[in-house]
Amino acid sequence: MIVKKKTAIPETILQDDSLKNVSRKILIGPEDGSRRIVMRLFRVEPQGYTPYHTHDFEHVVKVEKGRGVVVDAQGRETLLEEGSCAYVGPNEKHQFRNPFDQPFEFLCIIINQD
Image: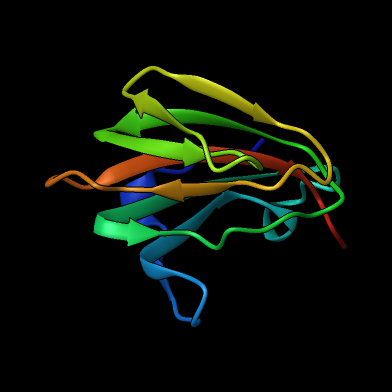
């Protein structure tokens, strides 16, 4: 069994032309012995956003702090706030944005891609 505190996990600042002001922590993953799933914590700063993208795996999201929006394939924005959950299916275009003035944090759980 592995037990950790998120405050003890290093944060990675993600840098790419397709995103802005986003960081990630791998809370539980392959380094912990998890062969099938990975639990990540994303932090999107005010006015930040993740890539508008697709991938061939599903993921589930739970908002831990703040507010943000998820953008779907048609460009529609749906509000996400603390306690909200979302499911993004395989090959479904999506993006997470933070148009608000406080940080937006969410858990994102995916299957292990290795």
